[in-house]
Length: 331
Image 1: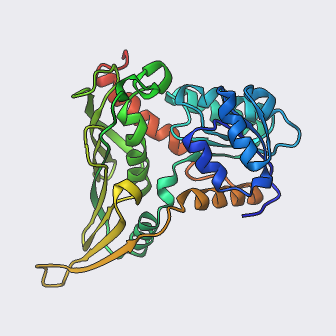
Image 2: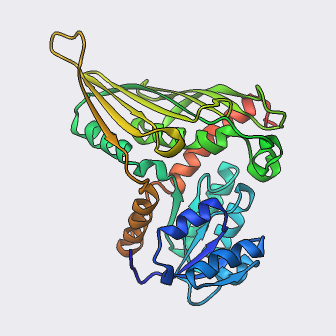
């Protein structure tokens, strides 16, 4: 998609490359990574400059927008610097390693009147977008509760990667994949006023959690029952939404998670077995592109991005409470 926005990409690993693939190469002005060779490789592919100094990248006068795809501990520092330079920002989830960090970014963005979107790309998967449409139409009636699971099995040496170091990651599986579940649950049910559950290290030899079990409740009593795991072994995603007159079940995210599928169970007047409709979305994952397209519109229309820093802070509030109650953080 061609636009007139010019981009600095900070963080040129797997996610940075996914973000770059959503842009017209001519948009990318500069690529930055602490590993200069990684920045140079991506920059060469798109015809941009490379630097190991993110401040040099974000203060470039040719840059309008900064994509921050670093490890968790650097997200806030880079985002704040980009905002201070007057740039719009797309920062990967979780946007910081504490609610306070996310709040500081939000305050800075408000003061500088720039737009900040947080990379919760799962909201842009076709099955989840269709589920949102059905819920909004009243197809399954008032929502009662939802149940969701998200997990993978790690890999050899996983307990020695940066995600296993709390100083770099801010936590384990809950802050990694679990933050997506919390965001999606809030998208459908709203604000959670009661947070219960715990995080645990069941298998991996690391000081962060590999499993988290959450029960979140809204003021109206709706419950989100969530499990995030990196002892799943077979990658899986399952998101079930229960209404008074029907149910929606989203499975898979494509790739190793299996074909993305939405099953709609419609209650019959006489109850019994429901009418069942299955929709599959076997195509390429375009959630990243759709999310980027939405951000262009945020900037053009000068609107507050959703999900943005408000939603990221709400998710981090939940994560902090679980980590404190589980002994991963000092209360």
